[in-house]
Image (cartoon, rainbow, N blue to C red):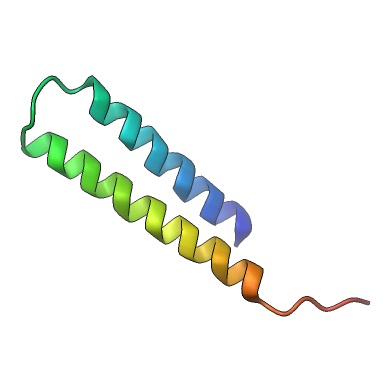
Length: 58
C-alpha cells in the first residue's frame, strides 16, 4: 500500500509539472491541476493509512 501511495504522489507531481508547460489558463490546465490535487491527496491518505496501521513484531 505504501508503494501505491508513493506512486500516486509521483504521478500527481508529474501532472503539476505538466501544468507549468501549458501556456495559458484553459480547461486543460484546470483538468491537469485537478488531477494533480486528487492524486496527491489520495496518495497521502494511503500513506497515512499505512503509517497508522498497527505493526506486528514476530
